[in-house]
Length: 203
Image 1 (spheres, helix red, strand yellow):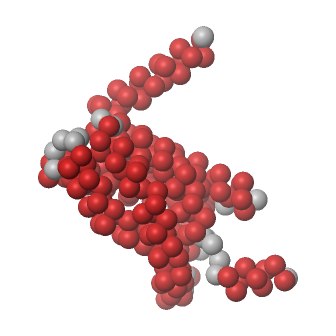
Image 2 (image 1 turned 180 degrees about the vertical axis):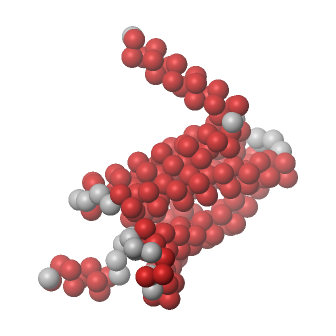
């Protein structure tokens, strides 16, 4: 019972923080859930733990993606207010068409550049042309599949988000879903090309 009461108190404090500082709580929640999703993939699937990669993923989702999404959802709510079927579907379709390709491409680009920077002694020692070429090749290879997977996953999640979840709780709800999506996104965003994977297996 004591543990249950403690969890309830933590939840109430979290809700209070969301209501008092929604943008700040969006940043914190986004960092935590993306870190969890990436760590689960690294440890559970890849059998390793790269702190630089985990930090890069957490900063992208918490520091960039979550606050932008929070402001974007507010704009959609102002454009199509209400939680009935028609405004919800408009928001879901618009969100999917606009956010999905931009977010997937941005994550791959961010990961390649941020991790190259974190792994270098100074920014001047990084071969940025090679990093950009690697990011472009990775997007050409993985972006169509990411967009297809997103179209299967996010419309249902977004429909629930826009139709049932209060505005102040949306980052928590979407971030919970993002634990699973973030793990998948991190896996695809760091997956080597098929030829490289085959060479590694032969070696």
